[in-house]
Image (cartoon, rainbow, N blue to C red; front, side):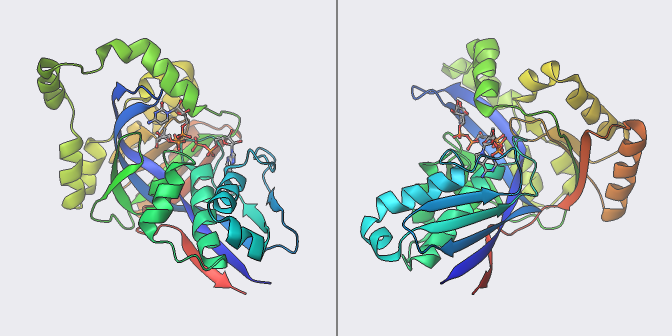
Length: 316
Ligand SMILES: C[C@@](CO)(OP(=O)(O)O)[C@H](O)COP(=O)(O)OP(=O)(O)OC[C@H]1O[C@@H](n2ccc(N)nc2=O)[C@H](O)[C@@H]1O
Ligand SMILES: Nc1ncnc2c1ncn2[C@@H]1O[C@H](COP(=O)(O)OP(=O)(O)O)[C@@H](O)[C@H]1O
């Protein structure tokens, strides 16, 4: 029986700008996405049955067909019915290290790993672009998780252009265990509160060009200038999440007071990251936060940016 183990990294958003709403209910975005080396492990095994089964060691994560890893396997079965009939089902085991509902694309990266793993398990020979296209059917962040590294994402987040990779910039990541933010809620609230300010005419396009700085962020990445990357972090969703979650705002302020290169909420939150000059600074910042916010509910991780997307670790 063949099996694969895949390592599926989380992402952070170095930049997230909402530029408009869309008729399909989604939002038009400019994002810069970055893989980090905090990762889940996904074991995929061909099953003797014709069933898709998911297990996860984190009780917050469903194991039925609402798990996005299950949805990824079902999509493969629907797209390739003859291959499914030939090879049968698959058992998926998720070892969760990425905090759940945190704005770190934990579910999306699991789905990307399943697409990549089943492509191998079923000898489909799909290209990365084809896997990204399948990923877009599952969620806006899945194509990026298939690709990994550093990328600009536009459209609803599924249209990718790679950027020069940013390896080994240290960051401290904080997440309150008991807080979860629904992505759908965050975008819906943004639309209700700030939707009237979307850019809809040429004059406002000019003022937006003056107000936003995705270009400065791209330049900072091209020059691998961590200090400038820290200065240009941006996330529009902070406008709706921070007022509702004072702990998240406080964490962000404590990171800022520790003299980091920059700090920002990731995606729809509530995790917050702080970019650091070195591993040593990251350790000092983590220590500072532990002393300043002595709360058992707050989980802190030291991690790094990585050039890796999904990695295939072993084949048995
Ligand atoms: C906010 C971001 C930032 O990277 O990620 P997370 O914080 O969830 O990790 C993404 O935009 C999320 O991507 P993803 O989590 O894949 O979202 P999806 O499943 O496609 O969509 C979840 C819901 O978010 C809203 N949504 C998502 C993307 C988008 N461009 N506009 C939206 O309005 C829609 O209401 C949708 O029903
Ligand atoms: N494989 C999975 N891993 C994590 N969460 C999952 C998974 N499948 C479904 N979910 C559900 O998806 C929701 C969003 O979780 P997650 O993908 O971790 O967050 P985010 O979209 O903020 O990055 C959670 O409510 C969780 O229960």
